[in-house]
Length: 336
Image (cartoon, rainbow, N blue to C red; front, side, top):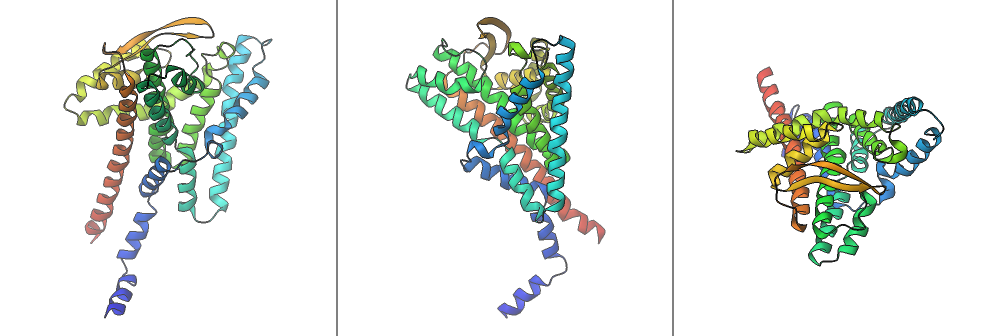
């Protein structure tokens, strides 16, 4: 009887097919890759961000000091588009000729998503600040930011870490998830590549003042759909509308990068902390507007930023998964 029941289940014309379709659904692949990436300490050499030195070297080849500002601006648009085109063609070619497409997509997402590095940064930085080890916290944070961290106080380190974790986690994780749900693994690859290119050609570096403008605008354009979803998810809160309004007020504080400013302002307001303010880049004092509330961030607020963005990322995945399961359950019934 047991053997007959098992044979009947496997030979069912509907259940195995529906189960197979559900398991290879993009949302199931995404949640599996996101959980594995969060738990597995993948080496930095396996991640897409490992291409940062290569992108920086390519940028140095075309971003010559003797060229005019217009030529450098044009080169700063054409080089990223060329790199993105090559990466897109390679990914499409790989997906076309390789078997086990679902498994390949899962592996690619595992290498593209970057939650674990931000978790490690936030956890270690907060631990150093709790022990009042400001020197170790500065040394840990400096490779991830362009501002000068050598003279930051404990509050300055906490604020810089909160901003770093917020922006990097949103662009390299939440936005990647959003573009995967929109365009598949190609969209996720493009989003992460644009983020890495913007880091390599960051306009805050003196030599990239004109060269980095193009990729910054491309990044802000690609962040627009994730920002809209991030804002809509906050409507599930009781104070969601007020939080979103505070995010819109931050647009005026950061006109050059409005999407990044909105994310910083909304997150700071929700967590009741102050972000922004003055900082040094290349020994030059730059004063950014302050966003959020007036409470200065502490060491634990670094982890609060991490938990906040991680929660909304998984919330987006779970909502997408719920919609898929609901559609899979209702469409066959409607057809009958």
